[in-house]
Length: 270
Image (cartoon, rainbow, N blue to C red):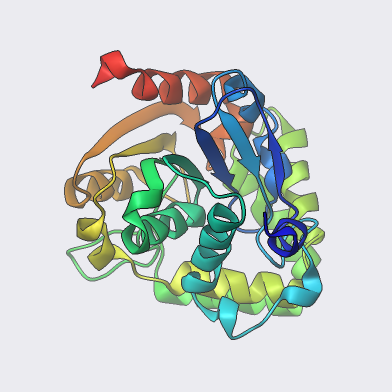
């Protein structure tokens, strides 16, 4: 076991199973966001939680702007963890941008992964002419990044509840806001830039591992059109539209999220 990687990415392993289930958090989040669903799988699987370098309780001194200047730095974090723990037949669960991180990791090392589970994925956040609707215009993203730079706390407090979209449960939006605010603003802005300007549409066709696309019924960050696009262009994918709203169903609707994952993982489903 490579203890350097384990410490760097604040890796935690638990559970009674042998097959690994690796949970990868989204932008501005950390492994703590999985606490409502990960324990439900611990009897059957070996659960691996971690923080990307620059997030949560990772080793901030390991952050390198060049390495994390595109998604490949985050892909390497995932592959490093798989190597450090000698993982095989991994079930990868990625939220938001981590869906594309997992997809890229599985393209690079297909033999490591058995299943990919994408929670609120998007291969491209920016609209592209009449052919592709990602939910945002380029100028929207530029303004968002500009606000992050000028008033990070204000940006976090405004955006988190909009992303979470469960106004009757303000504590969920507050937790996301607090998570954003606990991240170094410079690192967060770089990660946001990498996330929102990435375009992985051409990568979808390259994946050889079966995938589950979990799409929320009303999600500002990944609209329904994005889920349909992902499903259409990702071979071996299954699309499930949740009743859950917002971009974080693993926090706002954990029971539904668990049920959909379990149903897809059951051998009888295939």
